[in-house]
Amino acid sequence: MMGIAQPTAVVFAYHQMGVRCLAALLAVGVDVRLVVTHRDNSGENVWWESVADLARHAGIEVITPEDPNESAVVSRVRACAPDFLFSFYYRHMLHEPLLRIPPGGAFNLHGSLLPRYRGRVPVNWALVHGETESGVTLHRMVLKPDAGNLLARESVSILPNDTARDLFLKLVCAAERMLLRILPGLLEGKLEEQPMDLSRGSYFGGRRPEDGRIDWSRGAWEIHNLIRAVAPPYPGAFTDIGGTRLFLLGSYWREEVGSSDNTGLYWESGRCYADCADGNRFELTLMASGGEALDEQGFRKLFGNESIVRPDMDDQEA
Image (tube, rainbow, N blue to C red; front, top):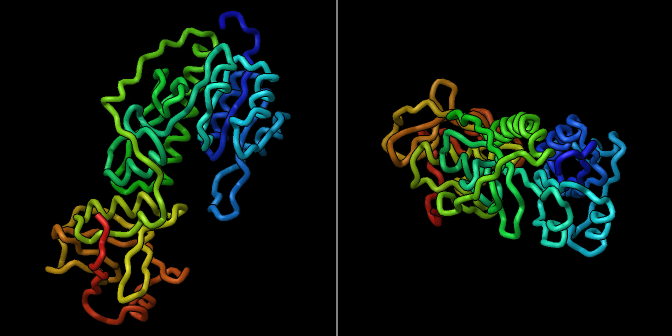
């Protein structure tokens, strides 16, 4: 790819990561000839900017196929004669007919430090597992997901009270920094690649809203991690109390010993705490039920004035 006056590309992108990564390509002078993205789902909480809007401002053609691998889309991409193909948080796997098109290669941006957290929703899984570091990785696309050669990685720290949104926005900034740093070498064919050792990594599938159910047999740190991993704009963690569903949408970790001998929720000096099975506790900073946020008065109106309110413990998920 040496000597290309202006490299050309087709970009598959979505979400805030897609917006900033597309912006980085444009900033270094890549001629993006087509953007393939998704239509927003009316049933999804869309809190990010639009890849399609950015592309249109830049005068780039946009398509939103249901299946990017159908022959008509492959033909359209081939007609663009791209030197490179990039995927930035695009939600579908790209098959071999697409991957074979660009002579300079096809590359994907993944939201973890590969080979760790290959697969779906790596941001949420990293928080569920209490990780203290994550990052982004640019790798060559092959048929197997998140398995191609590594080109670059950029790390970020995870603080004890970072939510999934906090971490995701850190990763967006890291991705932009990384791309601006490595794109000149990549576009000139000078960036070294390293094989990905899958034996040193892990693969995770997607998460469902039901996966936010709290298992009160877990310790305080584990439950806090679940809450922050699925806090808004994600669906939220929840528990049932006497048939009433309570969403735990925010928590704060201070590494404190609990005040009660029993697992449950209680108010102390105007703050709500959760005492957990390991004898430790964390503070609940945002709760809701029936679509309404709950303060202490609202909580007591729902659950009474008991000193400690115990969640339903039957049928807890591991």
